[in-house]
Image (cartoon, rainbow, N blue to C red; front, side):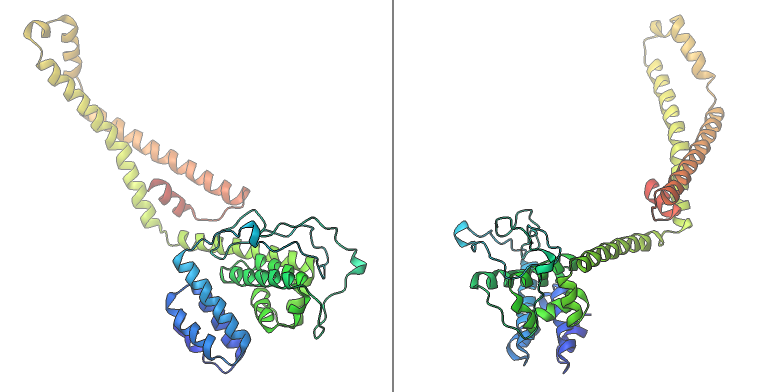
Amino acid sequence: MIDQYIQQLQSPDPQRRRQAIIALGKSRDRAALKHLAQVFHNDPDPDLRALAKRAGQHIRQAVDAIDPKPPSPSQAPPARSSVIHLIGEPEDEPPLESVAGTYTDEPLYSEPAQEPPAASAYVPPMQGREYEVSRENRERAKHYVEEALSMNMRGDNAKGLKMLAQGLALNPNLINDGYFMSIAASVTGLEGDGAIQMILDSNQRASFAKAQQERKRQERIEKHLSTARKSTWTSSGFEILLFALIITIGPVLQVLVSVESVRAYLNGLPPEIQSAPQLQEVRTSLEQFDVGVLLSTGIVSGISGVIGFLIQGVLVHYISVWLLGGYGTLRYMLEVLLG
């Protein structure tokens, strides 16, 4: 699969090259690094060169499992003065993920709580217009955009969309940046105005996040069902047969070993002790011991145990599926439990 994306890097279509760069970044395959380096040095599109550089960094950090140290207080940028606010945006910014992918509950930068402006005062950024943005906000917006790309490569587009929204709030000039628009298209699956509209609209972002969660849930369900469907009644039947043999033969062998152990113990006692009336009664009971009766009892007990187990398994399965909304197959559940 990676070879296909490597070949796609030579496509004359910038859109196909962009898709290949992002796919290689998601692959986390060290073999893609040299090809991304070639794109970084040779591609005529500066936005794609920047994207290739970020994808290569993502692969190195994923492969080497580097945990970046948190910035010292002296390195943290000062609190921002927002140039533009998004409709329905909460007061506090969400926590960021580190580049290595470790989630933290602490925001990357501490900021004072701010009252969001009234919806009537909101003016969305316009393409082609230059906004006055402080250097600190530009740098912070850049961090948000890079985090959005990392989240996209990890398959968490809901958080990536949130990071893009925070970046655009800090620096509305990103709306004119091709690199930003490429990442926005990858995260949202939309192009141009459609991607920007989703980033700006908190309702669309909420719907997108919900859809992403549902998609991940469906992927987990399909993964589980694909495994469950591989189970056959032949393999489940084999497990049931082994279970029946264990609960039938096991107790019978245990009783036989106990009887023989008692006989050996009695035979090892001195003759004067063996002649005691109490021990004579024990000897008589052991001589009347019938192995056939023991086997019959074990078989009946084993069959009863298997039937009871199957009844319980069927009840658990259908209660889980019908009442609790679970997913799976009865044969797979029996095979896992018995295994």
